[in-house]
Image 1 (cartoon, rainbow, N blue to C red):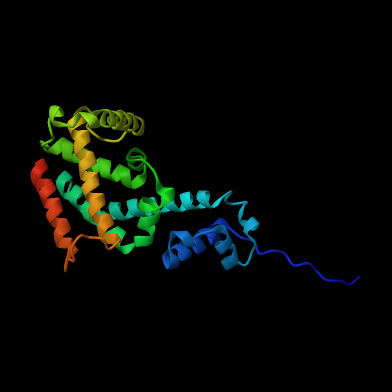
Image 2: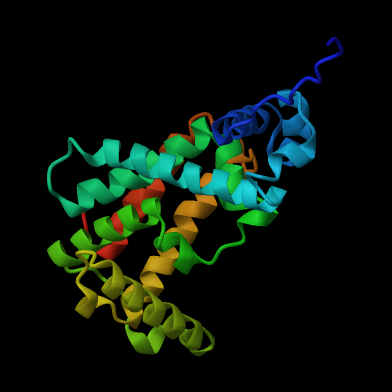
Length: 238
C-alpha cells in the first residue's frame, strides 16, 4: 500500500515559547511579543500555542512573573555577601535595582512600564523582589530610629489612600510571615515608604528611558546623591 504520509506539526513546548518570547522582547520590545510572531518563529500556526496560553495577555503575565523572579534573584545575590546591616543592605538593593533596570531595559519596561503591567504598589510588594524590599525596610525600622513625618503633617487628601495601603500591607505581612516590625508601620512610615519608592522608581525610569531633565556625564553620581539625601533625611547612614 502506497501513499503520502501526512507530516505532523512540530511539537511546541512551553520552554520553546518562552525562549522565543524573550528573544523577541530583547530584540524588538514588548509590542513584538505576540502569539502570531512566536508561532512564525517556531514554524507553527498561532492556534498551536493556545494549548499553552489562552491569550497574549496570559503569556505576557507569565513573562512578567519570570522577570520579577529574575530581579529578586539578582537583588538577593547583591546583598548575600553583605553584613547584616539594614542600611547597607537597603542601599545595596536600591543600587542593584537601578543596575538591573539599566542592564535589562526591555524587561524593566514590560514589568514596570507597559500597559499590561498596571499593578498596584501593594501587589508589587507581594512579589519576590517586593518582599526583598520589604525585608530590608523591616531591618531598617528595627535597627534605626527612622525620621518619619508626623501624622498631622500628612496632607488630609492622602490619608484615606495611605490608610488603605497600610491596612493591606499589614494583612499581607501577617499572611506571609515576613520578619517586619508591623507595630512600627504607622501612617508616617507608610507615607515615607511610598515617597521612597516614588523617588527611586522615578529616577530609574527617567534614566532607563533617557528622559532625565539634563544631560549627565555620570548619572550614577546623581543617583547616589539621591540615596544619600534619603539616608540623611530619614536618619540612617549609607
